[in-house]
Length: 262
Image (tube, rainbow, N blue to C red; front, top):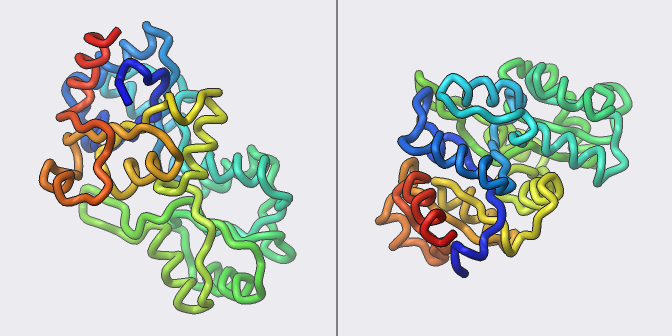
């Protein structure tokens, strides 16, 4: 695989284009390059608690100007998956109000009495009553879907339980695991490719985590570009049995490499 063969990009966000409230050096210029060169790209985030408009505004505060259509959250991907790939329309939902709005926009119904499926996400509004209802329905055999497998969500005050932790609790009570949509599941990549209208073989996943970003790329048959500006280190790359196709310090160096190949 050569960089010159890549025609589109899926981009992780935190650790790849920004860290917390601060952009990674060179990220804005890289995104400008993708836009001016008319290279298809899509931001992907496993966080389903906020919608694309939230991330558009967050990027804008860092000087990165993109339309909300360039952002696909795990929440939006789950809503799209339900609408396009399943017959389920009435849902028992564990999730934030923002995630519920994503589902309503996808013509889903929030029906805790006679649902077709149970759908869970990161949920700061979680109550024991909601958890009890979901467990009873999962135990009864209803289809069971989750936005993302992350066990914790990083915050400025520490790590807090994420969707994967809620799924682990439900599994402990019911013995069942959900069908996850977010990274590293290839379903997320396939939905993103559908949005872009591009092929897996020529669309690269750019991210900072081996076990989510690069694992999804591998499972979806996509080139993987690991940047060392976030979580994964050069030592991690040496220790992994399945190294990514490319390893670069950051998207700044990726931008430079693309300019040289084009």
